[in-house]
Length: 137
Image 1 (cartoon, rainbow, N blue to C red):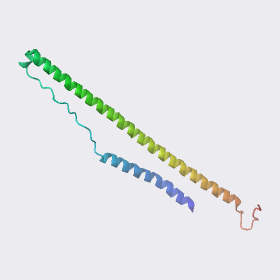
Image 2 (spheres, one colour; image 1 turned 60 degrees about the vertical axis):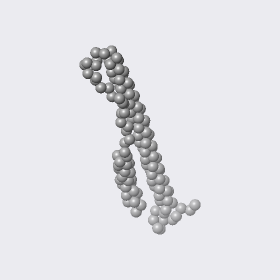
Image 3 (tube, rainbow, N blue to C red; image 1 turned 180 degrees about the horizontal axis):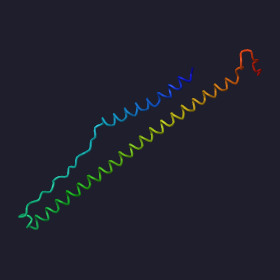
Image 4 (cartoon, rainbow, N blue to C red; image 1 turned 90 degrees about the vertical axis):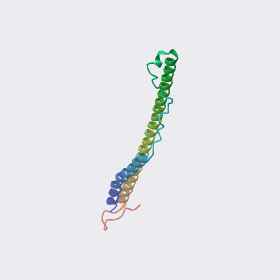
């Protein structure tokens, strides 16, 4: 009689785990992503061929290009650092989940073995038939 219950519980466990994983994915998707936009100002603008004949204009344009490039490179570097941190946090969450589910699974298996051992022990103590003499301890 207990066997169907244990089997039903074992069948429900993957369904429950799938539902929990589904909720976690839905929650992760629903979270807003606050990724800052690149705000590198002022953006360089080509001053024109006429202005580029002046050394002062050329140096100002080159400085503007250099500053803009440094800003963009810093932005990209910051995003890469952020991605790495998010990836590490994601991996840690997955590891925590896997460890927790592994512990639950091993605890369930240990409980099942304990129940089976208790049943086997009780069966040893039962007489083989109602007319059989009981063991005298």
